[in-house]
Image 1 (cartoon, protein in one colour):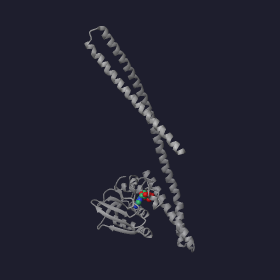
Image 2 (spheres, rainbow, N blue to C red):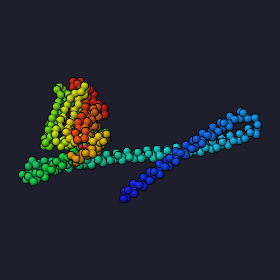
Image 3 (spheres, helix red, strand yellow):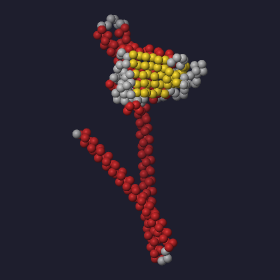
Image 4 (cartoon, rainbow, N blue to C red):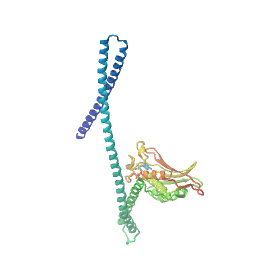
Length: 345
Ligand code: ADP
């Protein structure tokens, strides 16, 4: 009820504002046509003087023309005055906007610094938690019962997820502060893809998913920071596993002209069309994301996009809701014996 009242008051206020704007436009139009009519009348009066012989009529015509001129002059003075006042107001508004913008930029910078410091502070306790959980599971503190093993296993998994999120936050702050460092070197993409798939296929198998890898014959070298490209591919494969209930994950590497294209195809939930325009933005999660995985902050694809852009590459998705997705990225191929200079940030 209250919600409805509030809505109807806002609606009335908006309607009032629209009425006022209409009235103002009508007023301007009347003024404009009035002034135009005055100018035409003065021209006609002056023009009629050519044909007049009688001095009294001439005097009357001149008198009327003078009155019209006086009205016109008055209007001009008023409108110039109004324009000056408006201009001053606009200048003041622009100054206020600049100040507000500076304040917002400062706040944004402070927020990024805060996230960076908080994430750094969280890193050590998380490392301790996952480290000790691993030691307990390995039996370094004596034998563990299956109940304890279960509980500590959950602690370890949660700790690892937390560690991934903290790393994501740190990466975002690095990107936003322009502090991301890249160690460019000649990278064998075939090896990188194979190693990344090997690292993650166990998680897919545990979920009952099939993993298929297709790698085109021949060499495939790129100039890249291997860790960053591995991070991008891991994120895409991890997402494919997270958002697929059953079926297959297919990872492929192929050459297209001067580019190497890596694609991760899944038979998962797909992405609704309305969510696609913002998918690679910060904190963006598709509206169906929670149907398979509540885990995730919506930062992985944003980071992937930034990392691929720093390599002068491109990342994109082809998907249909309910029918799976294919995330691909392409990077320029190079001659390993004659590598080009590293791209500039
Ligand atoms: P998150 O941590 O939420 O997975 P990402 O940035 O990696 O964040 O992905 C952003 C969103 O894109 C996800 O929340 C999900 O909605 C959607 N998404 C990413 N990959 C897939 C996929 N393979 N299948 C379906 N949806 C996906």
